[in-house]
Length: 266
Image 1 (tube, rainbow, N blue to C red):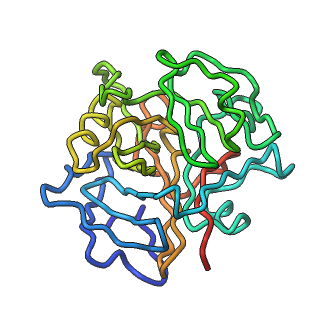
Image 2: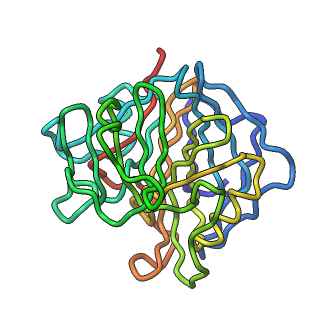
């Protein structure tokens, strides 16, 4: 296993793992079906090739956010957010602005407006109660979103017709993404291995995940995923990003101001 994979009390028994080389080259997704391991009610994890996946039933699991702008504290790593907010799983909620706190797109939690302004990004996710995913070039945000406790806007990866909306590019980065499948489940996706977004989208569409829509939540060394449940202590961090960090040397999660999390059942 590569140095980037840190396991505590237990390994991901039965899940195929593939390391990433020091030059940032990626392992291809496994050809075999993804093996899922339940870590708490409504939450499963799987690994294929370089991709770590958390699959969440938003009816059974308690989906939450933690925001530095709301708590009044400093940004934390995903691992630190997991401890302070009792999250079994935590991933980036979105890219953030130069103030170190505000999401680049619209973000509201309850009555707290982290960023009250919508921009040109074309994906929005609304959670609690239930879940709704919007393609903003098809459906404009309106008062119907007021009923949801969490609303976040991010850069779109895959449109609602399962369409990869990214053209091919030479730019690559480690990727953290959130997706929705045809059964209405949330997917937290993390690849330390760098991909162009076109190739990343093609990869996840080709896997047996039944993804219908997806959004980018962070790239490069700030991309993070933490899992602390069922005897698993796993804190993943990205590294490579074209034009920012051209190597695979990052070994630690970076502080981030906003995370999407799943409350621990223990």
